Length: 178
Image (cartoon, rainbow, N blue to C red; front, side, top):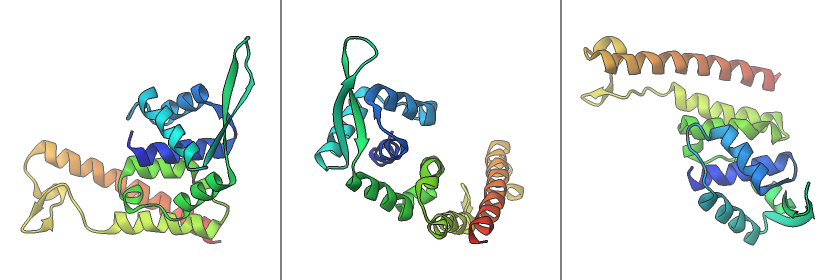
């Protein structure tokens, strides 16, 4: 998992409430483990970086057994950073589908309907720009213009997915604007 994805996941999940590291790792795996597994070697250094930056705090609580456990909470600065990342996502968070879905996971934590709609409009604008996996003379090719059945399959699947996502984005933006 990329550093930016992991940071947003940690901040977003802790934005939902305090949790210990093991629970945080399990929740991150539920979100994206099938695509991008997160290792302890990535997660715990990321938590430490966020602690040093003052975005996350750690405190001990009684565990279920005899051992005490470390519980992580989002600080006010951490909540502000989460809201900033949700309100002003990086271009890659808009253009990369997996990163955009990560953003969508936590977008309901952004309090303003107008801010939510603005983020969705950015994604819609990105999806409405002409693009393809394949080009000829600088022009994006459509599925009907390629002879390779696998290339055509990629383009047809991308078209269907894009059509469904654009439809959902338009409906959701209209709801947020009403």
